[in-house]
Image (cartoon, rainbow, N blue to C red; front, top):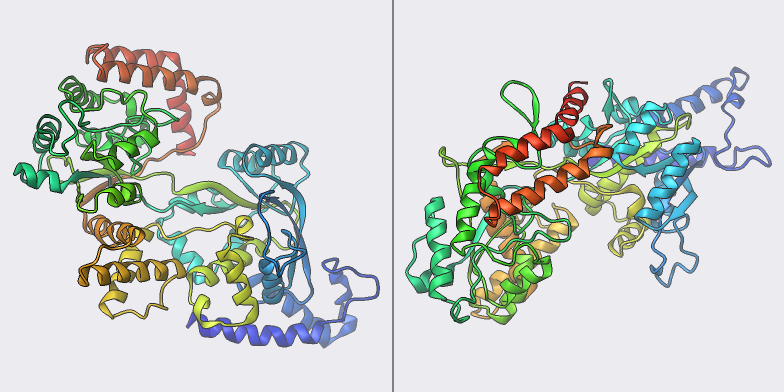
Length: 582
């Protein structure tokens, strides 16, 4: 139904555009429209013109009757070259800008250009400080707060309600309000956030072929995990030599730590959640207060397990200096057979598969709490990309319309049902990585589980492969190729092996998992964090490392908690509670 309405509007819109083309007075530039010209003296024609502008301002797909220019702050990659058929390609002239012109009659002009990272952040900071903003730009959450507090950006509530496509609303709704809530102030929406999909629960990944070789049963408890890792280290099923098999590798360099950043890799999050602890997260307690997870008493039980395992040699003795790439090498070379990581770990296992196709990695949801569930905390529902519109811009809905159109042609029905030349050119441009950076992309919260369902239905023959996103379609083809290789008795291609084990094996477990989900309630920064947080974080990580490695006794955790509170932790906790309550 949505697609039929979309196509009907395109036909009507084309007629309207033809009727109003050439109506601008001599010397008037595109976008410099003078609404006062549509006066009662023009009679019925003026009334109809006003209706067309009203339609454009309240409908996702209706084009503007005259070209609307808008300025943007854009990230550019100096090393990027444009396709040969776009000799004058630029952020202002590309397939996507022409596509938006054809569909909505809008044209962007670069207000400032910057390379991604510090350069872009500097340009945004200067714009905020001076109040001299482009019509549209992306900002961080901290920058968004400053913009709202200084009344520099438009209220997008009505624009969203009127011009967000059904697909856009469905995606935001999948976050149960958490995504838009972070861009909402006093009940009004001031930005379009770019979402973060759910990482799902973390798994314990084990070498099943090693387990079979040693006659070990599949693990069900924390004690089973300890027994299996002990057998791997002491009995050397990988033939690495005495003392050369690593137990559980961790990565605590390059800003990583042995917990936090859930559903990433090479951490011990599930050992802590087993006891009800959520380290490095701001969690609402049963009493309604918000507390910092790393200083809660449940942390001691998880630390006791880690300290015990380290003393027994079950945790990599070099974990404090291991880089991420070094841990991946341990896996690739067959020097370890047990790691904690998210559903996506097969992407890191590709090297191991190439060297030893018989290496069988299997994922388990362990360890579990007493109720048999794995506790998983969710991450920030948004990336640090919030699109805002400058205060006073005449068409704030333009941002919502462009993002809605982008979604429809990337993840909606329009990607397959509209084969117009401009749509095809746009999709080709996006597939080569051009143009999409300005608008940004986002996805359903349960995108991984949703993709699994769609791919499985396509494999089973109950879904048309064209009735899914282009990315899902490519994954479906890869999984089909994997199954065909297995059926033919051939070794599957590495990428097909990776895609199948991620998308059809681990994702299925994630979908069917009986998970206790905890939603942290704060991801921002308070006033005192800028001055105190790095000191508190250093104190935390140094103390935790010393407890795990045995340099400090377990009881040192209690002393750490008191020091953390006195060094500013209590002040920051109060500020966090104040912001959350607001």
